[in-house]
Image (cartoon, rainbow, N blue to C red; front, side):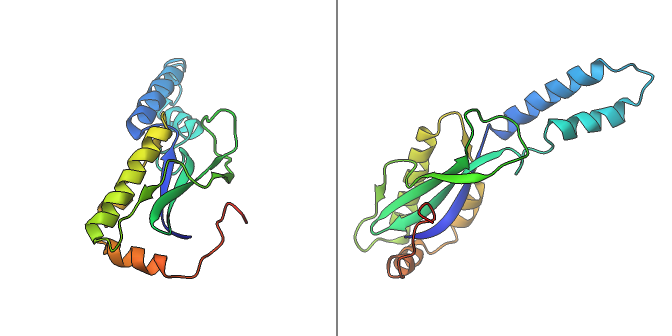
Length: 166
């Protein structure tokens, strides 16, 4: 099993996070007397709410890998009953596959491998309803990758133990 890409999983999409944060900050600032420094208090509220969305709202990762002739993804997430805003996170592997595997054809072209990876990511999206899987990095890099060589290199490499088993 060889890993080739980690996709961050966010608690909620970026736009929704900022909408909720702005609503919260405006409510807090409106309760402060006008004579005080509202700008400083606004900055304090933003920091206390959780700061920027990117990186701070990640609740897990889908770790994509090839296993034989299949694309799969381990799911790593925080161990909490409720996923809420938090700045104290420890990630644990909670499964060897997020969604049903996708088969890669024999002697695949780069387009075949890329299509299989994209299909797996879409399956993972449907399994992780209510979460936002950030595929921006994969989409940006994917069109430049030689997927067939990546798959072939991974397929013929020495098997490594899964990080879920460590």
